[in-house]
Image (tube, rainbow, N blue to C red; front, top):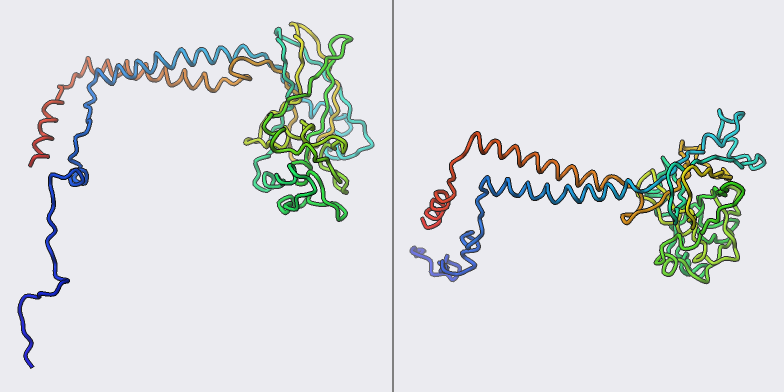
Length: 345
């Protein structure tokens, strides 16, 4: 048998596909479309850095001055509020419910503090951002109460003695429960504890008909207790605590003082040192602070703007000196003509 040889006429044979070199798609694939390719002349670079410096420096100085106008009083009390006999074993003191936990601190106002004056408690070395801790709650239960059965994430504080716990989870179980009473002279300062939580949290995340149930009734008590006759939407100290912090050192709002404090005023603080931070080496601080149009005291934003602005001005001066001492010939037109020739070839 002979097999015919020759060019194949099968339909699968290679075919030539015509290419339209004038199409926009072809130009796009070959990166030949018109584009803006600015040549960075020394004058442009120096001017840009100068403008950045002149813009950022005033913003940084303004924000830093606003932050410095905030007056703060910070008092750490966790170590001082432990009796001398228990300084070597603070954990046993805080866990013994028969021992009194009351303590008094004296604060002196260095500068005039204009109302409203915010009262914060600050906790250090407290990791509210731990994955297991953050997940230990039930958003559905906080909103719907006992009608919600989706509480599996609340372990190990899901139930006590076979009954469900509302609110469940480790976050609510570890509620901060130190209390503060402030006295100026012979007058007790009124602390407004309303509207300290976000309105969105009060209205949308905590049910108005959800009441605490079987809370802190187990053998191991974590933190504060809740009034079973007040709905969760009105227990703002719980709502503030349930919004977990991102860093191990954080402040949470306790209340507001609606009157001014004058310079050299002496404030006596009667507090209850109930909360256990000694087991994990945590710190507790009481903070009194005013606010500015930027909020509380935070120098980071102002320092960042000043650093960027100052660096930009210094770089512009360095580039200017280099440009004056070692000038470079401007090759923009030559380079652009060469690039056109390369594209056309």
